[in-house]
Image (cartoon, rainbow, N blue to C red; front, side):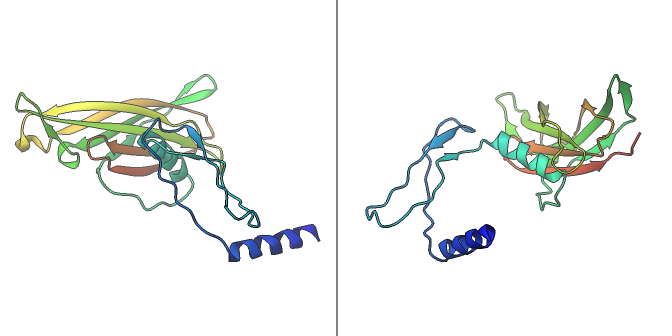
Amino acid sequence: MQSAKLLGEAARELESYYSIGYHMKPGAGDKARGIKVTTKNRAYHVRARRSVVHLSEARRTSDLVTASLYFLLIASDRPGFDVAVGEPKRDGRYLLVPVEVSIHARDLALLPTAQGKLKGSFSVFVAGGRELGDASDVAEMKQEFEADSKKDDDTLTTYSFTSRIRPDTRRLSIAVRDNVSGDVATKLVALTPK
């Protein structure tokens, strides 16, 4: 059997290997960079990746949102946020789903401004999921806001948007990234079939 031979070969190779790290210099994220691994002793065979990609924070969050549609992931609970999904409305072959994301200022990192106010920024990521492996593209929306002082850390910011989904979409994965601290939290929202 060819598969038994290949599995045996793979098992033997996994018993003797080296793991080599690669430190990437700063540069454009999300683009493949070619790498070549060679040995001084030609008797050794090297099997290695041909390229490596340094993912940007936005791409990492986008990947997390998509994965969260299908797999239970242990994610941070910061920043804390609430999600409310409204009644879907028909839009041709699609549905429009109103979504509200609410965040308290105290759940975000705030930076002081020259005017004595506090400024924060967050991004909302959303994707719709159907069967495993059938997910929509991830949409990203950025929101900046100001609070008057530390006493206003209970200020609630509500961000509203409409997500355009296929009628067979069963779940929405929503993530909020604090653009100051880099913290990311996700929530999965089940949708009732229409």
